[in-house]
Image 1 (cartoon, protein in one colour):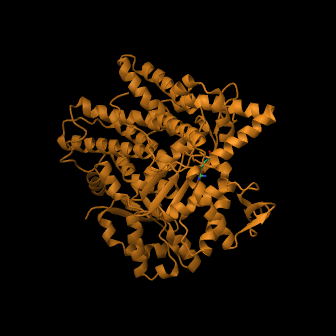
Image 2 (tube, rainbow, N blue to C red):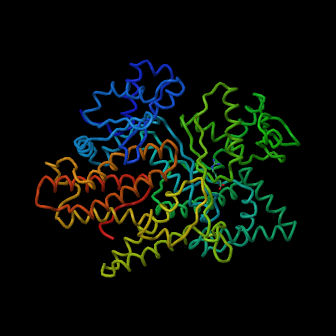
Image 3 (cartoon, protein in one colour):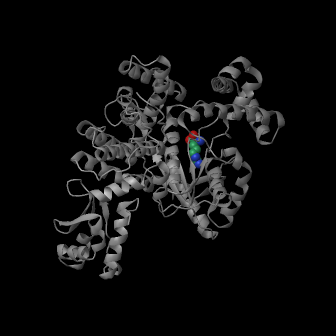
Length: 584
Ligand code: ARG
């Protein structure tokens, strides 16, 4: 019998059934299987300890009782008791070989990666910038983390809808349209549209501040837009179309393609129903002319209400977000929604989720699982939010260009003899990947310091280090005249040397890293695993020559190389990185 893809959850199942036979399960026994410190084994089950303490039993004796039930596992594992009642499992080399032979491609790895979210539908709300403005460095994290989360969820079997909830319906359009009608520069509009919109907005804003008559005119433009005036609608449409086309240039570089772009304007005609429903079910009330929801049980939101309609009767961020929850529930029938949004919007998200929970309860609907996938700020090396020297926000476009240039310098210094076009192509890939990975290798809830020299480097937990490992495996195949798509691994024997074994053991734990990253919606767990895998590979490669005369040894080493390549690439793809490079 072959080992399943996720060895830890297999152990969990077997331990549960053993505990069931001993009558421990109904008394609350949990196996608590986790990846072990390599010194102790591959996996360990810690559950006997807490359970025995609670039941006032001897933990070691209890663990032994469980182990006595695990006869069938001994075909694959060495099982030992350690300390006061830990059960350690070490995979035997033939079992490692068996796993490696089975999971031979990205598709096979995926087919094994079932999760609790299998067959669920998830919508991921990410990137979501405001239109008529450039994307700047503050927009990087949502896009990069959001894409990784989409890919992780899809890999685990969920149906994923990628939704760009753009801010395309704000009061800024009054001033912008006012200036557009009077001061548009068609040449800049064609060449640098977002810069032109930003210039026009600033111009309109300054003019309105200086002259109350302009302010009134701008307000009238907004009222006309909201009332459906054809000319203003057309200008607004043009601004949004052009903005989205410019955003797409960034998304293309980051490998992002949305299924839906339903921004705030889409919910414009859906907010009346929200006011009505929330009022009818007794959640919303009038307060100082606005429509608000108080949460009396909450320390802050009992006095600081969720404003869902402004004093002037206009909809706001909250009303459109409530309409969005309903639409995702009714139209997309989602089981879950992940909001990849800056931690600074936590209060808004908490109030939104709390309000939605009560509203759905009162109206007899089943609330989808709502998750705020928060993230910290991108800091400069001075530990303050990253800005240009002049104190301006750094445009994402410029940042990605600089990444490519810096990667080009790195690639050129390492491989001065590669043709320039090839160095450019490698640098395009490595530069963007470095920016993505610098973000994804950090726990997203923390701030992180954006340091070029650290992130575009072949040392440390960087994209270049991981991509270098990928290219190294490819070059082993290339130099031996072998096709990595069809590795000659027939006749491979089980791993034997310490380095072969360590690498094989690491490969088997890919599924645990994916599962952890997916369950917590924290991609850095996968990043860390890939880094450790690449380091294991480099130790193996330094110690054990791959292309040797003995055909069985050669086959098993090629097998290890090939599976390392497959797992590294699968993992990097899950993080949203490209890996299509032959050498670097
Ligand atoms: N446009 C918003 C901003 O730039 C982000 C929207 C996030 N999504 C949401 N459903 N609120 O801050």
